[in-house]
Image (cartoon, rainbow, N blue to C red; front, side, top):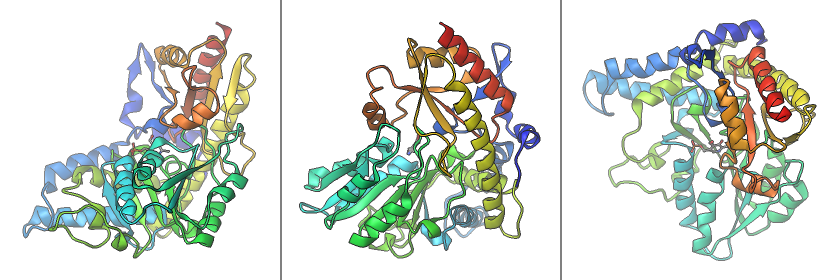
Length: 410
Ligand SMILES: Cc1ncc(COP(=O)(O)O)c(C=O)c1O
């Protein structure tokens, strides 16, 4: 699928929030890494669930049956989105962070002194903090070093993964710097020592076609509110693995995957929205199956967002006083998220002044606090992040660049 300016213009009509103005100007949303806007189809799916099918699961009446079917359909759609073999691999939760804490507790119950877990300096705290709690059980938590160019050190990864490693938790793409990590290396190293590979794909899911089968990961997490859906966390677990984990559950809860890690009643209406978000993405692609339409659509979006981000990256680095953080776009895969600093302007002040122009960017560390610290930007308020999404237009990029130039001029 080729996604160009005219596709962008068509997609913008699907997002009611893009009709909003602030101080007389339309809002330019570069805050996708913090959460994307939702198309009308997602809003309709949430509303329609409440209007017609709202019930708890496993009842003997029509709305409960419809709720069961809706949840099954959503799991099947997510399985297609992730390239997973079946809906039984897909669990839902409040968000990625909550699911990762639950996994860390479950995993940690069988670990103790002598065992090691590896995390990275680049990751969002959601893929660090839960695993760091295992230190209280005597587990050694090692960290793969982040280099000043915004990439993880592959030699250090090879050093940190040892015969004692039980699990490596690593991001697919950095929400702060756009770096795409070498997951093939992570798999090779963990496979060699029999360790579990957990991938945080929250930042990758809106930008790339994901394929858990090709990645060969044991677990992968993402969050639907980053890919045009509602606030729902998604967990993929390799067939058979979840059933071996000592998750926290009520005695009355189904013990098998995918329910084994789901506690209490899920957010049904939001999950109906997740299914609609995936259907919306697929509607931009071509193919005979949902999976093939998704792969086609996501590859078109990846190319489009890469073009926009490369343009912003190349132009903004020419602005006197601007420093661009993270890798350039020479790697075959790079998330379309660009972070900068402007000499003499505090990131919060920069974001506030861009916000006054209706240009929505984030400032700070975006919970990738260790990465921002390693880059030496923690004490000066972090960095200024702009993320691409399917509805970002060339005109939005012009407005962002104009705003940055004005700030750099002082
Ligand atoms: C890369 C990454 N991982 C994890 C998270 C946490 O996701 P959630 O808000 O679903 O807990 C985020 C959220 O910003 C993120 O960007």
